[in-house]
Each structure stands twice: as structure tokens, then as C-alpha cells.
Length: 150
Image: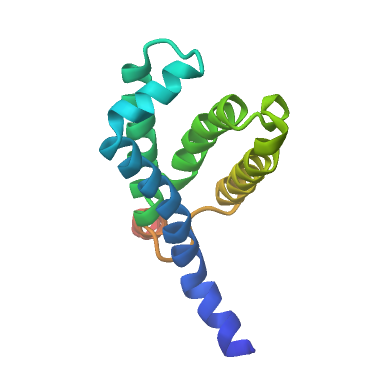
């Protein structure tokens, strides 16, 4: 068990960030490949400027996912994804407004997104972990501080 915990300490944050990024990458690719249909679905929900907002959503998801994967400015990336995900969840998965036959599916999507927000809050709290650009940058800064003090 100790060896497994050591592996999780070293690689867990990296694997977790990569797995979390997958949902945003897949969503962005889906929006790109079905741009017209996605814009149409957004317009059907009453959203204005659907193409502009859709491009913004794609950028948020792609950039946020890439920053999570490499672990660079990870806390800011997590915050940006939360800022994107909360209104999107409330707007598109407001299950309490759907017909009864769709409530369960929309509630599942809503709760999935709540869980993702929880994981992003966790990343904001603990950072990117040891295998990240953030950690490398922090270690380099500490080394520079150490040589400056001598």
C-alpha cells in the first residue's frame, strides 16, 4: 500500500489533471466539428450572438484543458474553467425546467458538472502537483532565491 501511495503522490495530480482535461477537450472538439448544430442549439435556448459565444466556449475549453495538462498557471486555469462551467451548467442543464422524461438525464449532467467544479476547486486549493510547469517554475524560483541570499 505504501508503494501505491508513493506512486499516487508522484503521479496522481498529473493523471488527475489529464483525465479532467479530457472532458473539456472532447467538448471543444465536439463543438468545433458540429459548430452549426451547436450554435443552433444555443440559439434555441435563447442565447444571443451564438457564434461569438460558441467560439469563446471553445477557447475556454481548449486553453483551460491544455493548461491543466501541462500544469502551467493551473490555479488560474481551474478558476477560468469554473467561471465558464457554472453559468453553462445553470443555463443548459437546469433540469428543473425540463419535461419529466428529460429530468433524470439533465440532472445527471448537472451533477457531473458540479463534481467537475468540485475537482477544479480542489486544484485551486492544492495546486498542480509535483509534475507540472507550476512546480518547476516554483523550484527554479526557490533556487534563484537561494543563490541570491549567498
